[in-house]
Image (cartoon, rainbow, N blue to C red; front, side):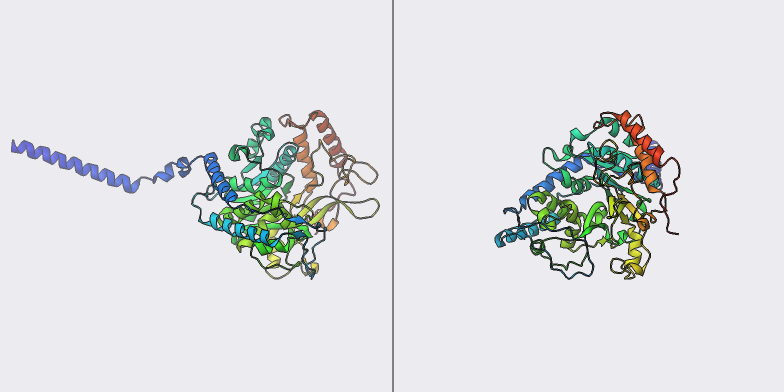
Length: 492
């Protein structure tokens, strides 16, 4: 009997030992669970994260409303080109009573404090991701698709999120049948914010905040890159600053009252140009608070902040909210120094340029100059101009079903002086030579695809066949064969 019990005990001990050895081997030699199942498999779905973020943000926004009447315009700022050596006084064209300024100052400071300490304001993005974000709907959708195809021509593989105001802008044939093949998806903003009225210029900052990406290239629907844009995310000045903005033509006209209520010294007019936010780069890891303050400026933009930030100057809207938010918080940023350049063709009467687009410089090449204190904005002779990196084709939008052909638009972009079909972008010649290749021909090749491919059925195009025929006719006349007066696309 004792022998039997001893045998059973021995077997039990051996079995226990074997289990221990197997468990130890598994613990130390099997891969960690994260290598088998992605961590994102256990995350809250993106839409739920976005809705939770919006609820928390809306609460802080409304808690810190300006609580005063809207600023009153005494006059509008003029369209004055930026002068880096100007000693002019900052325009003071907006009436804000002392009590109202104090109320706005207190609300502004409290909002910054609240977003910094809030435990509910968790950005919905996934760490380590990067992508491109834009908005488009209705007549902007064909324009965006041409821009998206220009992005892919550069070799870019960045995922793209396209935000739309509400379900009325969602086009199933495009969102489900065309965009996924181009690495893009549609997101309907009203499914996140409900019936809250967020529209027009305000869409931009909320699309960025709700996006799933950590590092973001924002491009308006009518903006496209000439080169692979993810290269900018891996280079200076983005790596150090996490925010890059580009200039507009004009001087900054933010009101002195804005700087007072945001507790900043009033900068000289020569500090920097106004912003043109058709394109900019931002890191949420570095600049989430900047984006949240920009959201505040946009949420109360129509009633208070748009007026204070631009004072009625050209393009008043969201354009100044991003850079000014960074300056108010003392956060780092890089504002491209190289001037924006108008693109178009010379008017037949010799009275200047008929401009239909803007050319923005390569920020890496610009930074290489400014880091050596070579500022072409003061002295263009100090160095060769940076290459063109983005084109913002905005005046008019290059939607072939609308104003781009004939004399429907004041700039007549597709007509020569004699009324025949011609290129839109032939001047200034020194700017076109910084393209590096025939960008306009490529752009029209993509417009032709958008116009003629059977899958691109847009709600706003009543007669797609007619649009396609017009584009093909224009292509044959202008781009099918070389012409003696074609521009030079390199400065070699």
